[in-house]
Length: 354
Image (cartoon, rainbow, N blue to C red; front, side, top):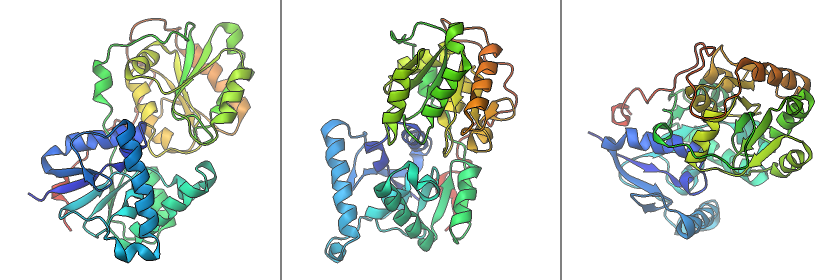
């Protein structure tokens, strides 16, 4: 049985969907994984704290050197096994071979560079160009991501789409109430910034008048570019509670207590929070025409993420669907019909022919 090495350097930076998808793939493929690398360092556990920060800095320096005339003096990283890169940017500090595989979450830095910042967009543009030139196999987390890659690169269509498994650990977590939240509420989960479009969701909530009906709006997540505008909108809007990145116990409680789920994102690779919300019985309101509709299926409410009036109307409709949930997990919502059910990778990595 052929063995693989995995580059999970993205775990040094990210504790959102990318992290959990990568972690679960590693668990599912444990029999064929030889080593897991964080930068050039193999480890059995995710580095955290100061070590994670130091390794993250080392990656930045390494990638800059690999792109400079000094690259001939510093050998590119290359284990003997095939490599699975759990984020495209890690191909920049490794010697990429055709037999390797790269997990693609989304083409956002290429298709929407304004949502990521110039440095990040340039980093990923370089990484994707290298991937396309090498012609290694691709694994996509959604049809939307696969289609975006096909539109932008004239590269061999050697890839497959997987739907990531849901986080099994949330099923066993005992919910812990969030003290800042004490009213019925709609919920948004995801990194706070321009890409997730929370400022528009908050504006729509203000227009909906739901606060006057005793229904709040709770948002949680780590900060990314554009978060300042979301912070300002939240402070100026009665009924909005903007939380930081919450613990798993708090997240479980939020899902189980919310009256509905909202994600008006401008860009997603898959949309793990939508799948999680559906699994825990919430009706979702999602952006029309994108991957979130692929994930949520026909039972979701949809709105144009740029249309405040439409989002507000759908928030009102969402709040009217479900009686307020104030304690304990709810039963699955019968209104959700036919969502995409996340599934595991259909074949072991070792079964991929060259």
